[in-house]
Length: 109
Image 1 (spheres, rainbow, N blue to C red):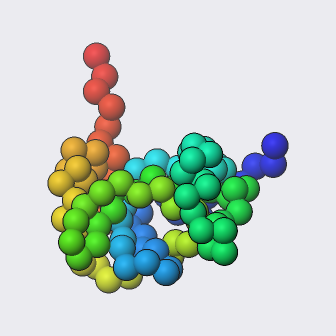
Image 2: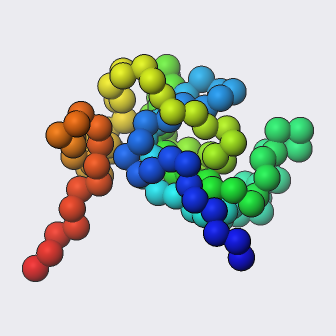
């Protein structure tokens, strides 16, 4: 298996190139790792290559907040500096000193 470096990191805010939503990355798969049903539900003419990183996002659009699973080729860095509304963000992330998001430290005993 060839190693691919993910372009985006956990805690990074990204937006979709085609659809009007953005979100924060909370997990990365080095290549497609969802179900065949999910894959086949993507219209063939816009179906991305499986051999690229896929990102789990705490996403939002104008109407709602949700979890999205998006290929790297369909994401760009979000430059808007607009705050995200998704209520799960504060459960997973803390604000970093630079104003970005960082995953909360795992509890240690």
